[in-house]
Figure 1 (cartoon, helix red, strand yellow):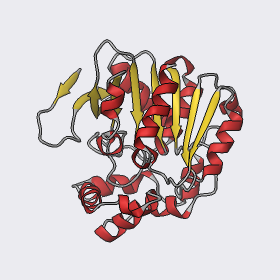
Figure 2: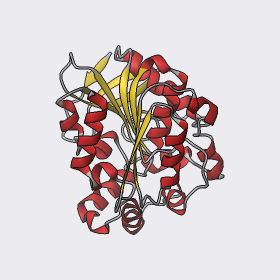
Figure 3: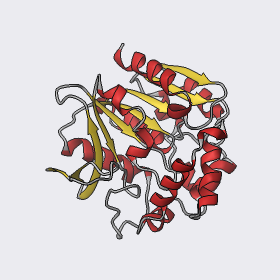
Figure 4: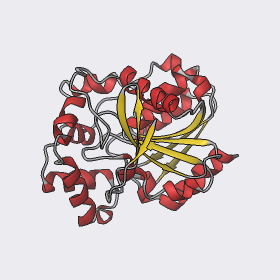
Length: 281
């Protein structure tokens, strides 16, 4: 059962019970179009809308787009009884979300942490994944970057949020005051930081490792994959993208120069062109 909530906040879309968890999601596109799931990253104050709003209209011209807030983020319920947030837990949430909306299979775009989830779904539920795009994706073991350590260890303040946003982008001039203020306000919304602090506690390298899919399982994935990465990414090093390219048997790789972790923002038009070509061909 879905419920559309009439509010002025564009980050709040529809709501559905997915595995017993009230899940907020953004939806766009024609009902009879094929499904495209967008899985956001793990930054403080992130929501599906904040992560994807700049590209949803372009993809909604071709697909029925669903962009959920994952458990622990945005406006999706975060049950107090959940003691440990694991890859298993989040993958089960995505699959439950698909089942609740009657989505038997879909194309995926996963950003960073969302890339790790998309990869794991392709490995564990291959019949549910038509194609998938990994954008600045985690999901393999790598030594935690200083940038990611700051993201997961974030303590709310305007100064800290600006520093984080400037870490995401290659060109700091892209980090406008409005973006910083919006993400800061989201990060201090009642319960938001408390939930965020539960997701990736110390030891954070261990939490990152637990988001990884074993390499032999990655090699076994047959769904077509597009790997998109910024060469100057300070959150997930570009070397991870090259490893994906070597492991995924049906993959192609595009690396943007002069680009950080915000591929869909920093290289928006070219990103849309490349990804749409891959998804629709």
